[in-house]
Amino acid sequence: LEGWTPNFAGQEFGVNFKNTFLVEDGVLKVSYDEYDKFDEAFGHIFYKDSFSHYRLRLEYRFVGDQVPEGPGWAFRNNGIMVHCQDPASMSLEQKFPTSIEVQLLGGNGIDERTTGNLCTPGTNVVINDDLVMKHCLNSTSPTFHGDDWIKAEVEVHGGGIIRHFINGEKVLEYEKPQYDERDADAQKLIKDGQLVITEGFISLQAESHPTEFRNIEILVLDE
Image (cartoon, rainbow, N blue to C red):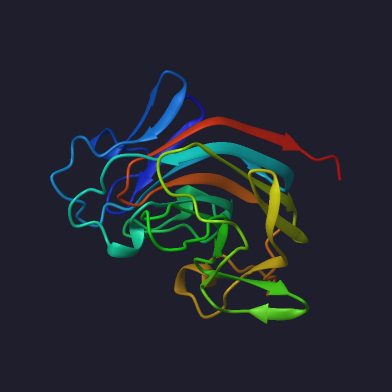
């Protein structure tokens, strides 16, 4: 986990609560082996550097069973958080960093469930010149049932365009990521009325379902 720092709601920054994040055989794992129940232990693991213009890609898969008392919506649910606030600025009880989330979802074997979606904790985006204030938007991806590795990629152009790709296919595009003035956590980050977010940290989630990540790569864009 060199270069990565965990953060959990209710815990001091840097505490790897119940060894949730670990690395085995080159795979970064979100593990709940030491949990009896979830108990609202929402977590993230942050990379040490902040980025503005870049392409980030990785492979992910969901494995095993959701930890008891994990929320229903968090079944086979994880996320790549980009343009995150500095994790050191999060309050002790804050469950999610103010950020843009590339939401990763797995199917239940029956129903359709897209992945590479958008969620906006404390933020909004613009699509077709309209400010979108809905918390989550679905992508155009297919549903992926089972435990196969899926390749996810996000292309970030500062405060401009952001694109999501799943297995090499673009599934979502939007622009002008910005703080939501209605959100209490976001309000603390707004400086001189500037809403558009041009850079931030990257994190991966721990939301109650075991998840594995591998081949995490970033390409900084010369813009």
